[in-house]
Length: 273
Image 1 (tube, rainbow, N blue to C red):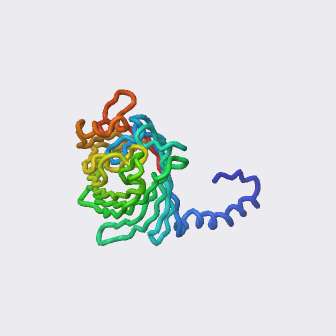
Image 2 (cartoon, one colour; image 1 turned 135 degrees about the vertical axis):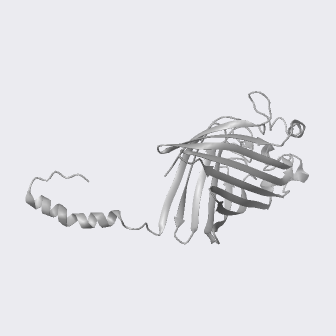
């Protein structure tokens, strides 16, 4: 704070006010905090599968956290191609949960509601999750499980009358790891996940686990540059060409006809607050 002191009275006022100002600057945070992030990515990959036809996406979200560990938040991204349900062509996630210390790590349990505003019916679904995080030396590790109970959005839906109202569930297991390179702004990261759900196409030609069971993984690095984080990751799945052939044309890129689950480098620029 800068003041132009033009009189002794002003100086006295400043000295009297300073202790209060300093106290405000050192006050502990309140019981509620708000955090968020925004990102520009070269491709939005959800569990290894492109949701934007292998094109760019703008993503942002925020979380409101109480000191007890309870939190609520939202996150959104544009969509295109596989995962397009009309309307806003947007995924809007609403989530809430509770995070607490467990031994030397943390346990986070919650629920995510996946929404597609203005889109077709029978596409929104709920998924519960639990993830355990901790450190092993310089490495941060997270193991998680997400389960979506039987819902119409996950069913093998088609235009035939007998398929309406069908419900399926989905299980996703994953592990993440990251570590910083000493003396550098670089963080190395790795991910592996396993999906087990309904094979084939769900509502509007989509599915959370399109081939029923498959693995996805990624390897990459983040670099902190001032307030920004630059990232790159190679993302891939074990969905074969023969498996993806049964999901065409929905499961192919409109640019080259290739599978939208093929390996690809994904670049990102993000900022957190």
